[in-house]
Every structure is written in structure tokens, then in C-alpha cells.
Length: 168
Image (cartoon, rainbow, N blue to C red; front, side, top):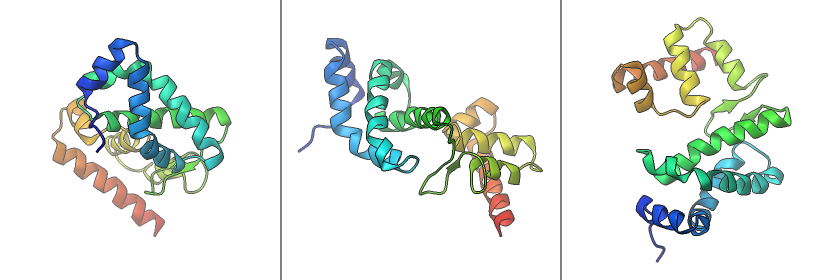
């Protein structure tokens, strides 16, 4: 049976020399993260990007310890930032997730989705951008905006409704 990786276990391993914590993270989460990466980039790039993400994130584990998120959620959010950076460097910012979150420019991308929201109130645009482009949680947006979670959720649902309506 696989040992559950807790923040305390990772913290102890990180402070021992850092290497075991990175190895533990990779052995536990690489498969899930690889599947996540494949939603954005071709298989030929996914393996290299996966290794790069773990190499870059292991030294930042203190941020994960301070986060209210689980280790995997933190990895996923930080990975999304690195995936976007990878796509921008490549010059092809387009990337479509299998769940429908689309990043990039041109038809069927986040930029085209944002254009469907150009007549939406600024608050709606802000919620959509923060959730789908920057990977922020609804809870974080509620806290940042001083609004309650139900209100932020309603704005997000309205944005998605506007997009669905526009797409026909």
C-alpha cells in the first residue's frame, strides 16, 4: 500500500536535503500531472515539460506548505502557469483542454472566448479570466473581491452561459 504524502512528511524530507521530497512528489504525482499536461501540449513535449515542472517546483515547496490547497492542487495550479509559459515561449499559445478550458488565440481559444464576453460587465470578465487563465479558485476570488462564494459562482455560471449562448 502506498504511503500518503502529507505536507508534514514532505516538509521533513525537504529540510533533510530537498532531493527525497522531489522524488516523493514525482513518484506520487507524476502520472496524474502527466495526464493533466497532455490536455495542453502534444505527447512529444509532455514528458520533457513534466520533468521541467518538477525540477522547478521542488525548490518552491515551502509555498505549497503555506497553501490551504492539497499538494496535488498546488502542483496543478503552478503547473498550469508553467504550461502557459511553455506555450508562449513556443509562440503557439493555443492549447485546448479536454474539459473545455481553452487557452490561446484564434477560433476556439480563450481569447476568442474572451471576445464572446466583451459586452459582459467587467466583474464577469475578471472572474472568467482569473479562473480559466490564471487557475484561481472561486474561494480565492471571493476573498479578493470581498464578495461571497455564491456570488462569484453565479458570475462564473453567467459567463459560461453567455459563451454557450454565443456559440449556439
